[in-house]
Image (cartoon, rainbow, N blue to C red; front, side):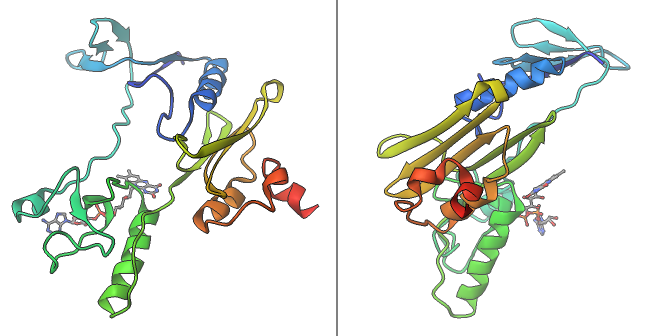
Length: 234
Ligand SMILES: Cc1cc2nc3c(=O)[nH]c(=O)nc-3n(C[C@H](O)[C@H](O)[C@H](O)COP(=O)(O)OP(=O)(O)OC[C@H]3O[C@@H](n4cnc5c(N)ncnc54)[C@H](O)[C@@H]3O)c2cc1C
């Protein structure tokens, strides 16, 4: 089946992958016969009683018999807004999960914490644990969640965790073998691993996630860090 992947941004999985990993993913997807169109914005589905194509904002129409849309997640904070609570994308909460009304708490998809909204269950569980402890009288604080993605995209293993944006104070440790289709980038800041992108071989993903989540000092691990847990255990 001739398949075209239409994506709004200039690279695939732009929130999870850096430019190098996204390029490798694009090549891997294309090698499987899927055509990739980046920076392409959908305007309309054409057809009357059945779909005939997808029209882009530049007027081009891609013929299609079937269209599958993945549109992302947007918080539904209507109830909070109607109640007069401070909202941006979601209902704004502080590190205690309180909204700007100290008698009202929010967590999960409707909540926005330190500028982040999460569309996954794991952060909601972490928030729920913190709020439950606070309501039970403990002094728990929610400092945000480390989000990880562990996927098999068109047969290619891809892993991403933490903050991969880099920037001031960050150093990259990069291990790459284009011939084998392997890429590994570890982002280090203040002697801690803060982010990781793995392409091709993701076996060490949970090891890196553990280092990120527990803010483990990496000085003693650094020389071997790029080779993952097996090399350290040897
Ligand atoms: C198809 C699909 C697949 C997903 N797959 C995954 C996955 O694989 N992994 C993952 O981590 N996450 C996944 N998610 C996301 C995950 O389901 C959500 O992040 C999670 O359910 C959010 O939990 P929540 O309690 O914040 O909100 P919800 O689960 O949406 O619960 C909100 C509840 O509030 C109720 N409600 C809304 N308005 C009112 C009102 N005015 N009064 C009373 N009740 C109200 C709703 O009926 C609902 O029961 C998926 C989501 C979808 C839609």
